Structure formats: structure tokens, C-alpha cells
Image (cartoon, rainbow, N blue to C red):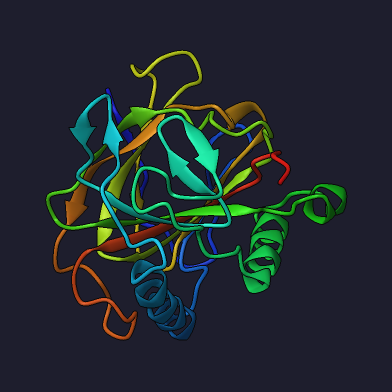
Length: 222
């Protein structure tokens, strides 16, 4: 039986796994709108937003990357699978945002200070997009992943570290929510089973669809 999180008020913490924390309503509407404005600039290039191909099949999610370009199953500075251009740098304000996210998710000061994310996968979901259960394991570093959601809500399935099957928990990720997973949950399988149309709040900057930003530390040099 799938667990499903109850409705949470902004600021209430939910812990679906060890070292995994959901903080509802973490981003204000103004912050969300500003990030959406940045997203439109990122998506325009120099490497445009695209649907990556996994084992020859095009994903329903479209992605633009910052800092490092992700393509299955590696990171490169240049988008050799798109147009060969170098991706945009990882912004300093996002490093600070990532550290604040860890702090407010309850991580220690030492772990917060050591957190310097250097890449972000910025995914756009339309109302038909899905993301199959997978692990984020292309990074050399196992520092926490910081995930931000803007726009339409989704059903996010957060599982175990052994396989794609049960046990897992289905979470509602809504616009402005923060989700952090690290430590014992860093390699947990996870995915998006459904996007819920017409749930984006007024003022978030996005009328339809969902933006998800995941910040990571690659552990790579160069």
C-alpha cells in the first residue's frame, strides 16, 4: 500500500525517509516568480532546453542545465548531445539558496558550510510529463540534493535505495515546496507519477506546467 502525505501547512516538516525532508511553501510567490523569469532566460540558451534521450527514448520532461550539462549518464561542460555549446555557469545566488535550504531542513552548520552545489538540472513538466523511478548517481559526490518546485503540483514518489519497488511514499509537491534528500536517502529511487493541471497558484509566474530545480554537487573538476 502506498503511503500518501497529508496536507501540510507552510513550514511544517515531513520526513519520508532518513535524511529526507519536505518543507512546504518554502519559496515565497515573489521568489517563485523571479526564478521563473530566470528559467525563461536559461531555456533560451546558449544550450536550449531539450528532452534528453535515455537508451534511445526521448524523455517527456525537458531539461536545461546550469554549471555542468547532464546527459545520460555523464556530466560535461559542453552540451555535446545538443549543439556543442558550453552551458551557463552555476549562479552564486543559487549556492547561497542551496545552503539556506539545507540549514532550514535541519542539517548541521558543518554540512551547510561544506555544501557548494555546482550544477542544477532544471526540468519542465507539461501535464503529460512523467519521470520514471531512478537514482541520482551520476555525481561523484554524495552531498544532498536540493529540489525546488514551482507551478503545478505533482505526485512525487520517493522510494528505497535498493530497487524501484515498494516500500515508497507518494508526496504532493506543490509550488514553492522544498525537498532535500541526502545521507542514507541520497541514492533513494524517486520519480514523478503525475502532474496535476490547473494547480499553479496565482503569482508564481507560471500559468501551466511545473518547473523543478535540483541542485547537486558533482565532485568533478574542470
